[in-house]
Image (tube, rainbow, N blue to C red):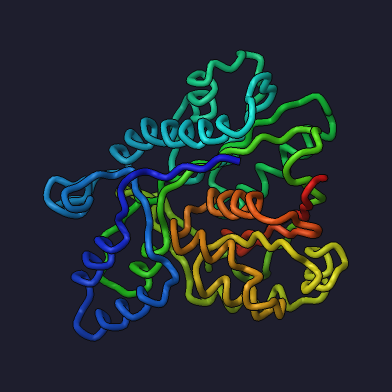
Length: 344
């Protein structure tokens, strides 16, 4: 697996900017919650001196850039960041003979798609089969990897390049209320790449699982507006996730019939500290079980679909995993995942 982030750390600058948007009563609460977020850094493709909201920055002044300007930037920057992740992957394994390309992204649109742009930049053969997973949100990495697994199982000679790339920082919205600013506080930019083959190396991907919580469609959603994609992330999400994981039937499916304590490799989407805390409590996990997820959250924030890939990459560099579970959440409210184990 390979990963990449841009070079601009915008987290502290955003906190300072967001604090200025709030009234005197909400400002201290926002700053306290920012300190407790478990996030130290978030990276953006947007330059700015000193930050994208400052003078000369992409978001300086009114009106904020329209969706068209944001999508033009996405069309240029998303493939570049994706290619950086692919180059990181190439430094670890040869990428010749790619037969399929699976790309996941929910933070922009362009046609021809970024799958075609990436394929052309890599010089892949025109016969390469492509799949673009769009607008599925944070669990799209599960869908992309699961799709690659299906391809390889049906065509064992396939070499599938899986790429996730998200530019969440393109969707800053004007806000003067606490909840939307806390939602925007979570997100950063990042890309990841993985090679999926039938060769016994790295992680062996097991069967997938999925579920959608009833009466929860409004808890995680985003709307396409004239000024970017407006993210809505309800404070109810951690509690609803915990309630779903407390269902013994779902826990049994997710862990392959094992007790959660027998899982030695948890790759949980780092959607926020409260979400990771909810997973830990609901499954009665050991305090360090989600260390990889918390480390990714601290260093990069929530990069939507790329986040789970970063967690898997971190686990791949660590001790062998005898029994692993990948788990991510997103719009719906849905949970998607799969089992995995280290190969010998």
